[in-house]
Amino acid sequence: MRRLLLPFLPILVGLGACEDQSMSRQARYEVYGKAPLFPDRAEARRPPEGTVEIGALARAASLRDPPPVDSALLERGRQRYEAICTPCHGYTGHGDGMVVQRGFPAPPSYHEDRLRAAPAAYFVDVITRGYGVMYAYANRVEPRDRWAIAAYIRALQLSQGARVAEMPELAEKLP
Image 1 (cartoon, one colour):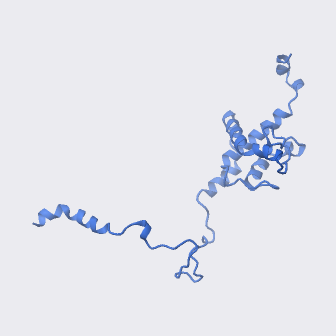
Image 2 (cartoon, helix red, strand yellow):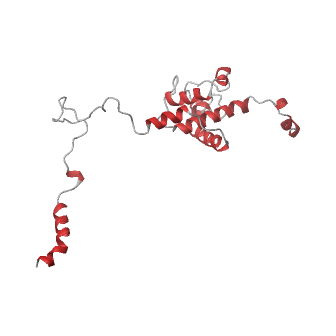
Image 3 (cartoon, one colour):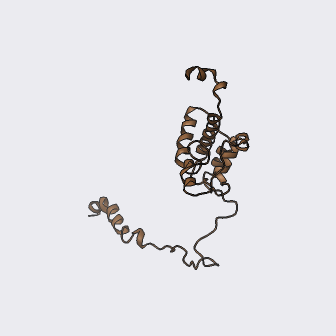
């Protein structure tokens, strides 16, 4: 008889363990509820001192070290710039985006001497921390994309300030 029941023993034990294991009925704290376990009776706890968010060190390193500029990075920068930056800064970077046309304060033009002289890291920092009425995009734009946008801004600056006389091969193609 025992030999007959022995193969079914794990199944019987498993069925007995399944009773009332629903996650909706387990013991838990309600959001912002009371927690008698802690002296301050709050269930929300602060992280311990010195805690570092997962991936924070890698993100900090990627902000410190710019990627090499190539056509793929510039294309990614163009895509991200058009998706994120054009509502305020406009497609050419003159600060004439759609929200500005509807009354929002205009950002500075990327073609001002001050911003032409700024290093690419300045644009990455502004994207990360915000500036003036521009809020921080640190949680919306990945570090590599911030560098891509900065590279594209630099390309915009170069394209808008280019003079035909300085490019003989272009001057030959124009009538």
